[in-house]
Image 1 (cartoon, one colour):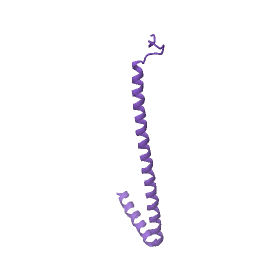
Image 2 (tube, one colour; image 1 turned 45 degrees about the horizontal axis):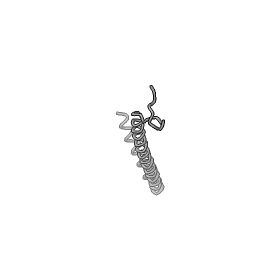
Image 3 (tube, one colour; image 1 turned 180 degrees about the vertical axis):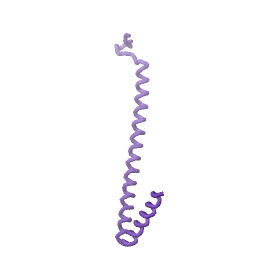
Image 4 (cartoon, one colour; image 1 turned 90 degrees about the horizontal axis):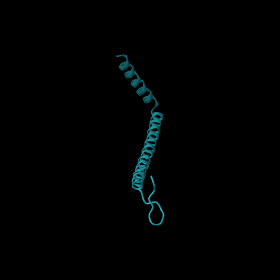
Length: 87
């Protein structure tokens, strides 16, 4: 297949060039959307990690303030879990 040239000797634009440009535009849009989703997931992950850290700190403080109650609650949960598993 021969390249057609315009009057200046340059290759005339090919229909595939416009398709390539369209596909490149779609790929760029897709990449932008993927990056936006990735940033949102990272933010959510960071928030979840912060909330988990805060919850652990609060639980630790409560256990230190009320050690006997914490032991009683842990024993009660273990007892009921054992009863459920045995059935």
